[in-house]
Image (cartoon, rainbow, N blue to C red; front, side, top):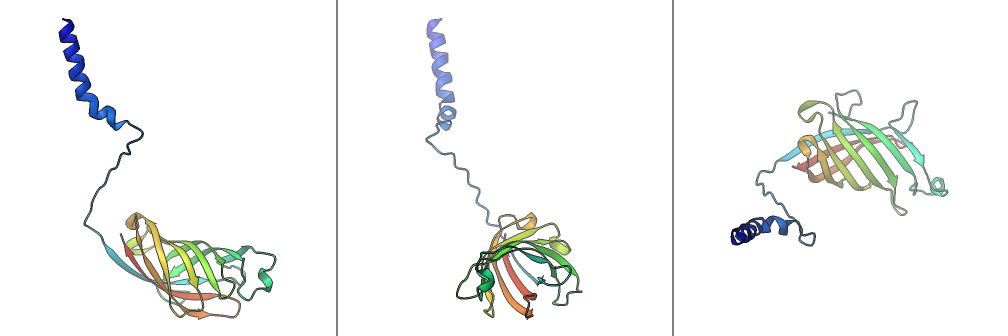
Length: 184
């Protein structure tokens, strides 16, 4: 009987050994799913950033003591909830909102560090979003910004956005055309 008990215990130990070894904190558990299906999506829209008037869509929330003396507003920080539309006309159909912040991060040139979520509120991508995080050299004709993530249809997104200023006034209100390429 003792031999049977020892044999059974030995078999039980051998059977559970892989499971016990998987609990070893020194050995990481790695799970990988390889998917060949990736979609490339191109989206075009217009970003309307209004810093003036009675109802601005972007407001300055902080600045360095020297920001007002800087030609680039270095150190100024803005919070935005800007409309995204189908065309440059502010009255055209709204397709989303750009929400987040941007700050003047350049001392020699007007360069904004942008951390914005572009959430789509209409059309095929309603309820999905892409996230832009990077430098926007505003005075360049074409700026390339990285897409670093997304939600909904764009979960695990990566890609880039090309921005081109369509209109800019002397107080800083702007309409910017975006051509976004997303891999998801």
